[in-house]
Image (cartoon, helix red, strand yellow):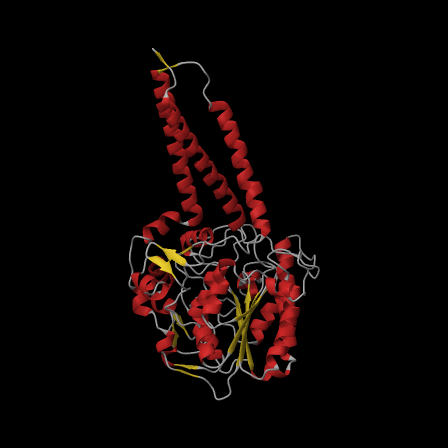
Length: 506
């Protein structure tokens, strides 16, 4: 017996094709993410997906369109061409076989996707941790607003240089890195000549804790001593999730900017990208009333043309020159200042080669890092020649490990891929104090929050702020107290305290 294709058939066919389209999008998106982001975690992925696209490098959007969206459309068109039913009648047995085969294929396809996503990004562990609760943050968190902080009589300026994807891994093995060649020799020398906290006797920096592994999260870790747990960004520029609307960015947290503003400092932040991206402008203006100088400022002031746009905005060679001009003007005011800046040329994939970059190596990223090291060193040397340097501390820190999927091979930087091997660079120049123990420390980027204050000569009651520990002190870090495995497992889990008291405050 043969049947005409009735309403139920077409509904079933439509549902199957919708599922096919979704699986195609997920498949090609997964392939694109693995190629362009390496082994990032689910927290990074979901945060990025929940943020507006404004400020994103157009190279990533073009790459995704070319390598994911266009293939999806092509394959889906072929699928429709071969599966769209003709006008003939079908036996019930044929309909049943086709339906069963389709469901089986889709189920196997979905299962393979789940396994691959878990292998690449730790998806299953992430989902499990959204259910399991932990009181670790509640028990260990130290509210900086409740801690006695004693500034020196003559307040010290601070220059914070956040190096995009800045790893100590970029050195040669004998210096503390993982390559035969040291791609950042100037940065190595800066670390050797100054204070640089390390996991060993070599130059190995901080480990990246969960939810600290992308730029915005890295900045929060460095300035608030906390991970950046998942939230959603809506069209009204409010932050929300299932708990309701967020009127501000981490309203329950006292940050470095808050502390310095309260102490009479003026906070500045300079970047060559659009600072709205990732919620950066919201965070820094709401915590410390930072004066933001970014890609848009450069256009407004006529430093760059209206149609000028490379990489994430404008290149670091311009950023350093503009920073020099701004610092001279700021220092001339005679008030204590916090001048922070974020580079961008070393962002993945492969970085941006400016006209200053050498061609010493076959790999572009190696040349970009060599260039970044020289530019950073030149800027530091310039600062040292200025009158305001006498009362200024410079802190150089990477924001997170690079997401470049090719340059570092199989070396991991997070727990779900095995032993943590890659570390974040740090160097502190002209600190007001000397460290009790500089080498053989276990620490994360969250420890840089109280450490930066201590470097300015600020005495911290208890030497703990947020989840961070003052590395200049004798106090144990949480990584030293619990070990990385326990610390990371606890931070991965859901924290009601974090959500209610830090992220969302009624």
